[in-house]
Length: 265
Image (cartoon, rainbow, N blue to C red):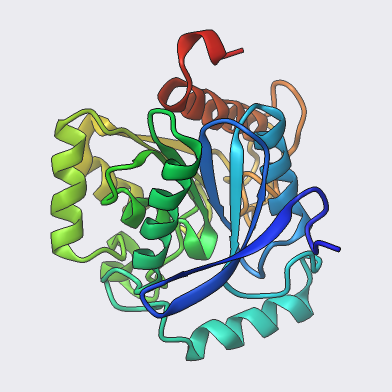
């Protein structure tokens, strides 16, 4: 029985790295890279929403226990594992090694699903991985939800993208050819600083669309200053709520770039 209900599990290996990948649905491919502590129910619910919208969804499991709840014990376990892993660059402003595996997964997903290209949605710890995946030509719709790496321990880290200069050059070249990127964050989120979005706007110009949801004290929707996970834990799935508006924008962004006009609802 799959740890993620409704998704079949397989293993994808590339470059000496191997991870489980949960797949479901039909249509253009979207790779959803989970946040801490892993493939928790909020992430898989987002994946199921994409399946229902007509996508073939790939949920790689990079750390944590698939299906485990969003809980403190799971969080501590995952943080401990990534801190000793060589796949992730936590503090240096450079591309995490796992990005090579994720790019290969995107290319494989495109080969399996066809269509114009692949969507990539990163969250929190993996938010910037969607940016790193944009080096891969098959990736046409990168979404950076509350990108958290490198850890924002000082001013330079808060503005950093966690991307090698050569990779940033490649992404910028793709934006001149029409690539667009979408970013999401809460305004008071210290784990995903506003300086990072400023860097993205400076480097990518109009190719980057940043949605920043007001979580300042006294904001009209009562959003906590601790809010972090736009598409999962802190999503209020009600029409008119700014997190729901952000989710709707993600869905429209993916549809515009991955589906033919006749396929778009």
